Image 1 (tube, helix red, strand yellow):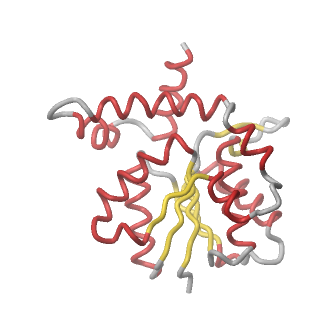
Image 2: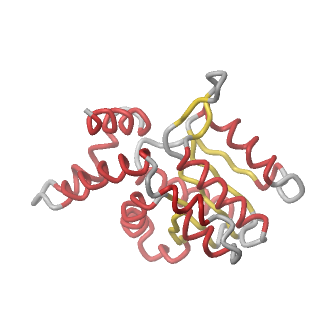
Amino acid sequence: MHERVAFIHSYLSDADQGGNPIPDRPTRACILAAAELKRRKNVDAIALSVVPELAKPICKRLRIMLPKSLESKDLISTETTKTTKGEVEEIRRLSQENDWSEVTSIVISPHKNRVEQNVRRVLGNNQETVSVKTFDEVLKGVRQDNLYDGIISESESWNEIRRFGRQETISQRLLKIPLIGGFLAYDLPDLLPGKIKVQKWLLKTIRG
């Protein structure tokens, strides 16, 4: 039975030299953080919220990183939902079905506030069972030898994270609109196309 689980929120997809889909840099950093937690036995299993085409490459990456400590039963893959709220609802569903007592939700820094808001909104009195941590918070906590300082420092200038930050700034502004702010930020995304499509459209709009 898995009582402690690391839950990876995946972001956009990238492509290798052969054009095959692979997780983007923020997602790869979250994968690294989850692997470190599993390697040190801080969690019993790893769960993924991913688009179907990324499930196989992410699972393969984790098995390479954890050849001795990751069994098939320790890896749970669920298809990504349209919204962050949907991902938190998926955490709730999986926790209830599998008796998870503690979930570490691993995110990128601009996403942390939104995930925490949805944890409070969706889980209510059970919100204490889920802790939301950025990948750099996890990596700093598990390694005392500064091994990952380069990755953490470099990630601050990643375009993917900067663009996501601008997207979240727009979201937080929507929340402040009287009467309809909550609907625009939390419920409207459920009526839109898939989460990844919306993210790509927003990032393209921000770049333009």
